[in-house]
Length: 189
Image (cartoon, rainbow, N blue to C red; front, side, top):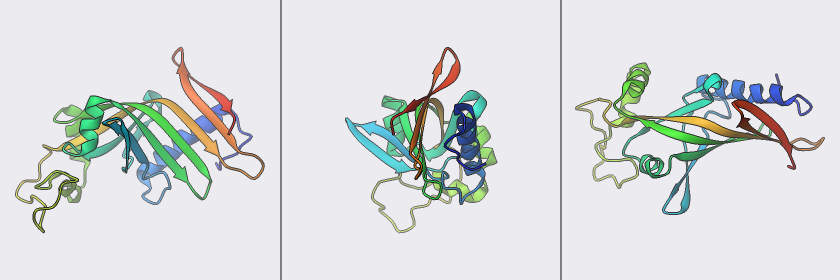
């Protein structure tokens, strides 16, 4: 299904989730690499992450990271994050506000670690923390590929907002949970 601006709220909401699910499986999908926003010292921080999974029934999305990266300490002190997705071809933006739980060294992180392709282990096994100055040319710690620093950022979606840019007129929809049910409302674009 393409983005149809005259579709019902429910159809557009479900289509957004189906596109998120597709993005986890298709490296070429426009929503594969969202910007994840956090706050540090009162200033907004953003970075690109890879969306790794979604569960619409539980309103969950997740990404992986190295536990030494700045975003982890930012999320520990303020466990809320925004996710920004944009598809330039469809001209559709999705913004999600989430409550993030960090999984490291627990059953959730172990399960996800075991699903990784071993080639990905290096992404979570650098000798130095991400974002620090590389003191050596070879910054990988190849002696031990373990899950010590591997974290799953499990995000519970609290609100979801779609903006569809269209020559017939832009459409902006806001979804939030009311009494346990997702409810949509139209906003001025």
